[in-house]
Amino acid sequence: MLLASIILYLFLTILIGYWAARKVRTSKDFMLAGRSLPILLSSSALFATWFGSETVFGASAEFLKGGLYAVIEDPFGAALCLILFGLFFARKLYNMNLLTLGDYFKVRYGPRTELIASVFLAPPYVGYIAAQLVAMGLILNVVTGMAVWQGVVVSAFVVTFYTYIGGMWAISITDFVQSIIIILGLLALAIVLGREAGGVVNVLSEVQPENFRFFPRAEWKEVTTYIAAWSVLGLGSLPSQDVFQRSMSSASANTAVRSCFYAAVLYLTVAMLPLFISLCTKQLYPNMQGDTQLTLPNMVMKHTGLAVQILFFGSLLSAIMSTTSSAMLAPAAIFSENLVRPILKEKLSDKQMLVLTRASVLLFSCIATVMACFRSNIYKLVGESSVLSLVTLFAALVFGLYWKKANGAGAILSMLMGFFTWSVFEFMYDIQLPSLVPATIVSIVSLVVGSLTWNTYENRNQSTE
Image 1: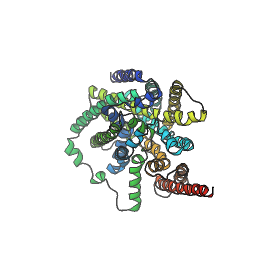
Image 2: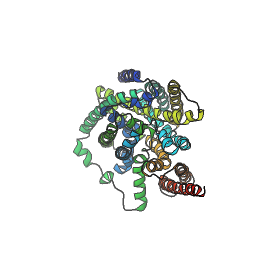
Image 3: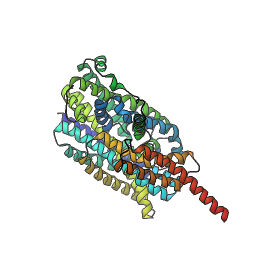
Image 4: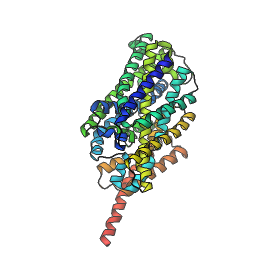
């Protein structure tokens, strides 16, 4: 009965997406929903950017291992990203009337920088898509008993089809419906498990004070690691296509800004529910073993009735589907618009661009599916997908918007040196610190030095002429 209900629920969700897809007539509709989303749809879309596997499964598993201090990266870093994007980026980028974030690098720095930036923009999404597919594989494993990798393949097929026909219009409308349902499902589960565990006060009283530690100790290594944890999503997702496309789909610049703030508050609030639920499960099963990512779905199966199970699993699956859908669309848009199109050096019609973008969705889906079959740690997959953007693109985005002297030479040097430094410390030398710290510093310094040096060189050439 549960499996049949979930299948029916997913089928209805796909029908909603298919109905919304009728609004897609141009590539702009497909990528940005025609820049016409009202505040409710825009806010729910931004809320759903990360509210999927890593928040419900990954963060709750990490919380059980290391307490509040272990989940600084998500949800706190994710909420920080939305606040910063609303404060400093949304209005400026919206007024530039761009189709992709890759277009920003083209307009600000030139075609060469666009190509290099796009190479760093698209690949990080593979890990993020893989994390969502792993989550759906885990859910299907609990509900049906099929192997996780088989669930990954089935989920990939379903969500790829949904993304292929949908686009941003379908994503936004289903996000709104699914956000309401997932909140109701988590609330219902929190209430049921909270009662079985003896109530909120009893659950919290059994937690060790160390598990509620939020700030680092006064040690330089721990402080640096703490800042890095905030930065992975908090800064690393600022130069990301999915945040960009969801914000730029808003009907106005004001809507884009306000949606970021509303989504940040909603995200941080709702994300506390899986953490509380994980405390309830630890109270009920203090000696539990095995994959902690399976704790939450197993608790739902053991401690709730059929109605709550249907609500929880159905809404969670559809929410992850929506997150995965936009994660597939983001690199597909970059790949088709900012990599393939310039290389072809031909003026493609809008219809051809739609075909190219949809083909790109299939490409990224296949790569992510293979990765998901071999990697299963959701939280690490999501974190790794954001680090590359931080060490390569963050400096070029920020300085490009707020420093007039930034130029293409400095931006390219920043991207290459940031990536090189990260690679060295990640794979060759262990400095007992997150590799993103020196890589980000080198990226920023390289942009400043490269821009100033190139400007000096050009000024000298002009003076000699």
